[in-house]
Image 1: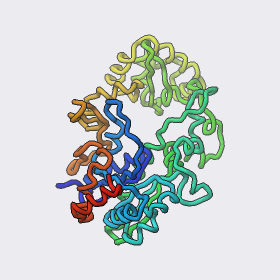
Image 2: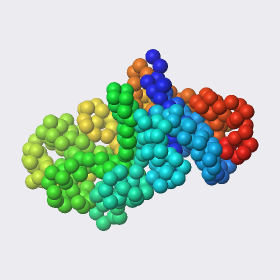
Image 3: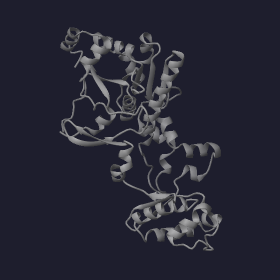
Image 4: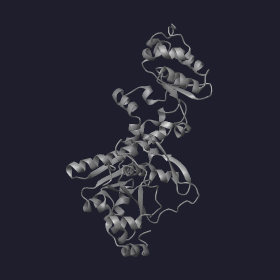
Length: 394
């Protein structure tokens, strides 16, 4: 079976990594993604190093370079939009209108267009015109102050933008399915604000239900966790951190107490209430002491032997070398034409019969201008050369 999006043409007019990556996801499953590189382009950096970011965000794309300043350039953009199934952008609406690629302009030639936009704060409301800047969206989401330990400044993780990547691709595919059923296109909006909110969905949902509480509004010290065996971390002998996820302590205590060297019937900890309430702090201190006696590798093996819900907090070198990561193609290894064997992030979505593929690396600016204008628009070679000589194309 072919790739599921093989008959979908996507125009990519994006600046931000997360929005560009969402169209790469569509290309991974067969969509023809045409990246619009509008001239004049910023000068390319010539460091001689592999542009690993571009090869992730722009893999499986074609590049068309057009100068939209004149009538010929804008006519080309309109013609490409008329042939597209999807437009994906993160530009401001007034910028899009200036080059004729806002939703209402595109609809004139392609009424059933699926028009997807990454925004800062959504398409409605008083902040609809604010730019799409993830740090600012994250700042309003409520999550940053509760991430660090008490007394430390708020933490920006950048995770909200990555949530937006998947949500934008999902929105496009859902709108395409709607069009297949109804014949109607529509607008899709994914905001960085909404994506950051969903990045903290469990905590924010709890706040909406409860409406108050220091634990939902302020950072929690690791010594103040309500359950020493769940959501808590302890340092091992070699300075690495152990994390425990065993909320039902009655279920886990018999095996867990054995591996850490606490008697199962220790009267301080022989009930769930004693472990999580009455003697909670005593158990935390006991576990701090005992986890420091052995290395992280010792604890990981002990957890595996007893099938406990616990593990070691790793750095990037762990996924970069994990066999399961390569078996599932979360990281792929390939021969780069200029830099030899390289590794890159692969495909987070696994389909058994129509899997994602890496068919091409990120294009150079304008690399496929001739090909796209000829194949998609039917332009003759002479007309393409004419436009190139006039500076409309690169």
